[in-house]
Amino acid sequence: MKVSVVIPTHNRASMITGAIESVLAQSMSDLEIIVVDDGSSDGTFEALAPYRDRIVYLRQPNGGVSRARNTGMQAAQGEYIAWLDSDDRYQPYKLALQCGLLDQHPEIGMVYSEFSGFDDEGFFDEWHLRRYHESAYLRGGIEYEQLFTHSRLLEETDYGREALSGTRPEWLMRRAWFGELYEAYLFNTIVFTNSMVFRRELFQQVGAIAPHFRRFADLEFAMRLCRAAPAAFVDVPTYQLRYHPGQVSSTSGPSGTRMHLTKQRDLLRVFRFHTHPERRIPQLDQQRVDQQTARLCRAVALPMLSINEGSAHSDRYYPRRARRYLGACVRAGRPERLLRILSFMPHPARRVGFKLMALGGALRQSLGQRKGQRPGTGR
Image 1 (cartoon, rainbow, N blue to C red):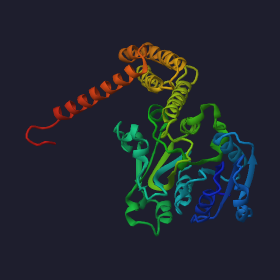
Image 2 (cartoon, one colour):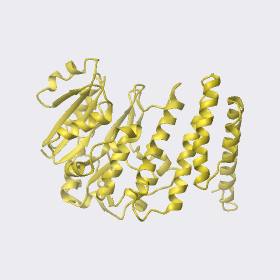
Image 3 (cartoon, rainbow, N blue to C red):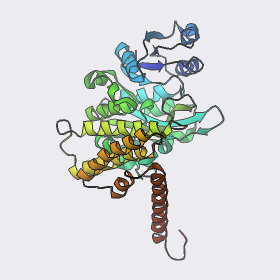
Image 4 (cartoon, rainbow, N blue to C red):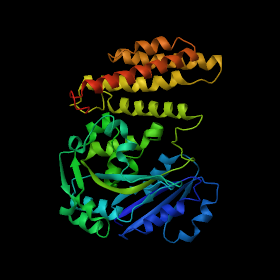
């Protein structure tokens, strides 16, 4: 087998057949599809019946997506491994393009790609990576030239011309980018992990996904891949991410603040793990590590101060927890004095304080933009 596609699923009977069909429609056929049923109870087993002779079906008690992916990767027979969530889809050229790159570049351990976002109500964003990881690409202003050391036009590559034949001709003028990504990945979320294709031998080298990193277990695993070998990026959308109300990672709705808190805390846990003195790479700048630690601790404290469950206990508990993270900001040399003051106030006062902070930030941004304008141009 050239590539094993691992599809974890839990109660997605109405969507998983679309995911499987998108793999069966690939322009390359030397692949296997491994579906890991993570304790579904909605008829997923019956929905998969027509595909039983074309997939490897594994079932396990519900343990979460990380454990399901581990099960699938451990069963994989392909030279390469790819991921696909059961509510998403591949473009038909995806595996030929990314596997072709890995064939031609034995030094590359993992290749990820641009991707599209869509929903069933008509939303479609073809080039979605920058918006999805806007903290790095839009707010942070990161460009591919900063992340990678060199690139090639896809038109100049055999795998690009072959895989993209019959698609849009202008896509051949997009690039494949190459370089050491690990240090940049430590400080910015830049990889869309679902789009990755990586060498199975690299998985065997770095080890399985660590479920205790929870919402960012896939990111932490991808960071280990990037630490072990150079990475590549293909600037063509090969993956389609579906947005829908049942998404586990959604931060909308009444529980959105708590989900946001969980994500920020898990991201901080990953960063602290990789910058621990026993594991960190030697060239890391300590001042930069301290600044990022403070930023992540502040990002955890903010939703803690925003939670309002209407009980005296929660109004004491969360501010007290937030002060622990604000204390870490002080130790990192970035004290958050205003947030610490707000942490001693009742929730209505904290809410007013957050609004004033937001207004102040918007005013500073506006003044900064006006200061940067050239006289008489308005630009």
